[in-house]
Image 1: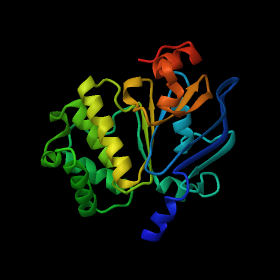
Image 2: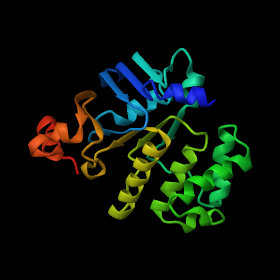
Image 3: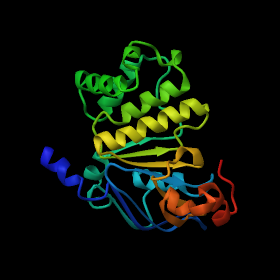
Length: 250
């Protein structure tokens, strides 16, 4: 197992090559190519309708792709879907926790979906929540938590099976600035400490650090790839994004 995980650090956590997808006559993605390195926080920056969610739906296998290639940790999603999806964790925009269950019950259920026993799921969940001071909330019902706390627990639940790639699709929508910053910092730390490759879809410039890799997605095409500071240059990432897309990022 350790040898396999070490080998994963030598290949991209995610590799997308020439990916296209259409809804009838409407082209949602057009020849998209991008990558996520192990241990990196990579931002997919685009306004609503840019194609971010479509890309996530293709990578997670919810949509069958029309053309192109997707690999997760070297596993081709079309040829070896089980191996590819086993290395993947996902946090979608919509909330996934049951508000009437406790944190522990939610984590046990999320673990069961991944074939993880209750004891192992709760031990791993407590380990992840301890990093952010929420381990003492395991017995609380989710409805008693703040939106930011609930989102952190969802992220912990997506990592119970120790994936190599984490997809986060606009995970801070509806949260206040302080909560958003805490979650972004938490996921940055997870990437660095656990060698986790993160693809973070957002339209919010302040969620991106200067040295984060950024893929600017607009109208289904990648317009720029590089670090935030490289893409922004002297004008800054927000102004560069506006110039490239004619759209103002928040």
